[in-house]
Length: 494
Image 1: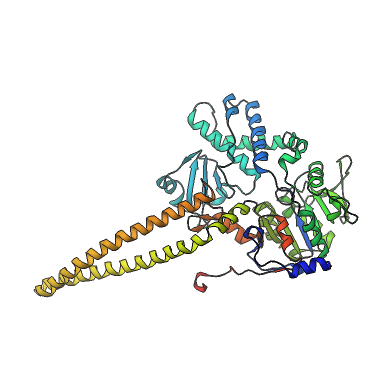
Image 2 (image 1 turned 90 degrees about the vertical axis):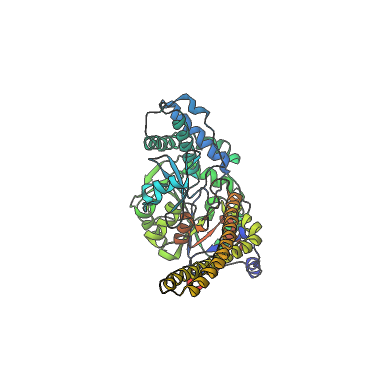
């Protein structure tokens, strides 16, 4: 049960939480009905110092390219932490990066560091609808360094056309292989564990957040793709405080699954293996899973059967829109919470410009009114022209002359209104561009492409019941909080 101290705190929840402290709701979720909460580790319970980690992954993977016989000059390539964002699509055949809206319209595209023109985008992608499955989706932070390296190699290949005798797609296939090798040989994670403070962030509120959920009688699970040795080191680091009731990080979790192999964990039937915590060795597990025991691999169906909880009694919290959120929801009807670290900065920016949003909406409203008035005026001119022509045929020249004179005045008015409308449209375009640049100098706002929702935003809306910028924002809410969606509104209902 929730302690008196926490009950008192719940009753005093601040309705004026900062935007970046809030949990946002797409689909109503009553936490009182949630019996178990599963957590991913990387970029969920354990946020990373992203620039440090992505630079490391970029550098270690680049070494593999050189070792495999790619030009030595590639060693000069540098990681740019400010070029990419999540939610982009990668066209591996053409070497292009795409930002797409929710209607599958490509609004922004780059080849290497070269921005494609509107005409090029239209010719390649917007003449007919494309299948997003044809492209690679940048859903995770781990993909940033990967795609950044691909971008730099594409740029290099275009400047040195004979240096790499492979297609862009073949280069990307090598890239994936070298990244897997970097993880398999420990070149990345060994460095992380040797200097963990440089790569993993500690959130001082994590312990309290998990304790409150436990006090709310929730069964907590850890389900991560990281292997035991790495998981143990990272979890020890982020939950190094202990007390009598929770002497170590494993004390927080009823079930601990490492090396889970998500997304296969949700739709596969791979067995569970017991993990020897001292040696890290595995042995095949049988029967129901035991509490407070470390397992490797496995699948969600067995975990549900062992725990006694299933479907919408379980909330899964992760950062990967596909591997964590989409499949857990689609396959087992788990409720979902998406962690979007980058929303921290974006929400602060939205807070800063919220007064400007009212002015911008007024500009859009005025454009609609001005455009409608202009169309009515043009229609009147057209009707007068046709009527004057008929009167001329009927030799009613006086009436025809009157309509011609009236049209001259209307035409002058139309020209003036067209000029005002063009000026307003330029102001709107400039305002949109300035807004997007204020979020990100290249790709703009994560959840928008111009005035439309981005494809990534659509995925968040479709698959995440709730979303927030960090796990510890849950501490601001009761473990029995009823999250209510207020955004499921059609345009005609607004």
